[in-house]
Length: 275
Length: 292
Image (cartoon, each protein chain N blue to C red):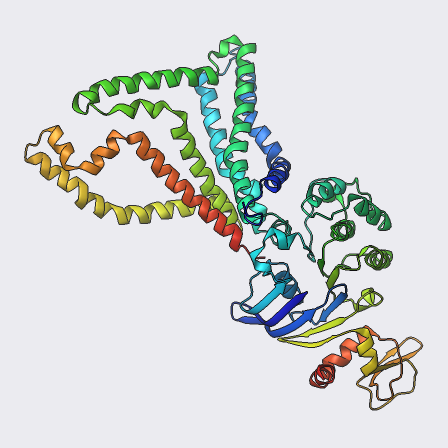
């Protein structure tokens, strides 16, 4: 379990995260959303132990990430937005680096590479950015770690690859694994992320499961405009409106609309979900 | 040992990964630098022939000069080429999240930089030089043979020095040990550790900034130590000498310096060991505290 308590982090005078508290349960795929610069990448690097907290604490199964102990690192995999291009074949890289994660499966790596339609025998420094990203996503999932932190994993992927990514995450993530995926492209991950965390500058606006969101908010896809809507947007073939779900009507959560509604009504949404 | 601090099995695997990484990043450069003896030999021969002087075989002095130059280039460039990526966000993040301990990373870096790279360079360079000398007898002695003779010569010189100094300082025994290669190796290892620390510390122009820092550090150290040495040693020595003291009495009045001279090899080794351990600790701290 991941426990974040009153977390604060700043780059010099620039405060990025302040007083952030949340808990991440095991076996979930969290979507981490937020505007540019709210500290999504910083939060992920703090969780991966690449930075030390300025205030508060982070505990991952009782361990402090910044100690970077092997027993902690072997339980996590961090996939940054920008990945390096090692001068070797993907399969050799996977064989060589995979040995440090006890549950790593080279068979799984090869299988996911096939899902992504990427040649595991190609040198990584000769791959396109998208191919390289897919090789690292395959490696991340093949490590079978308890926690996987992914920063913008669909950046650089073409449209079919985004679908392959969703398929790979759904099929190859074990039940016990917790994924925290940061993204700007909510639609890319709509089918797989649950719960959803929306980060604001120095605050967590929302940390709730899709069930809870659907219980409290109603996503109306009809074209009848409702003046009480928290957010509305024209979409092809009609509109999408986010309303308070007063009558407990079931609806499908639209993450983009939710995100926009939360940004427009920060304190109201925060109060609604903190009750 | 605590498996989060140092695990021999994991370290062994990591060392292999690290050596592979070093080969990928620096293998070709090292091969090129180690092949300079052949390049120099061929160039000298071709130019001489081209200028109408017939084939010229590069002699020992020329080949030793090339050896020293390429050795210095290896010394300065290898740490930053192999581990310079550490400060790069993309590659450094991947490196720091690999499940190995800080101690294992540090020891592996030191082994690669201070043992594997110099050994590989020496083995390739000296073998090629030996082959050239075997194929072309007019080259004269190979570097390996010259070093062997040189060590013998050094021992002889030291032996003579010993007998001369021995008349004043009868127990100045271990000066002969100055021909021991370890004395020069630990200096070289220290230099490599300095450049390794520079590679992990500076984000760009790593060797140049390391050299710049060393110059600055030397100036500051000289400014700090000069008054101490002048007032504490030289002036006292001059004063004692002006009183007409015999060499034995002079030595007795400076017990620390006398001990250091008597045990010069031990003093040098202790000094280098202290500096190298200090550099190792700084490298370990740098790896431990590195953030991306």
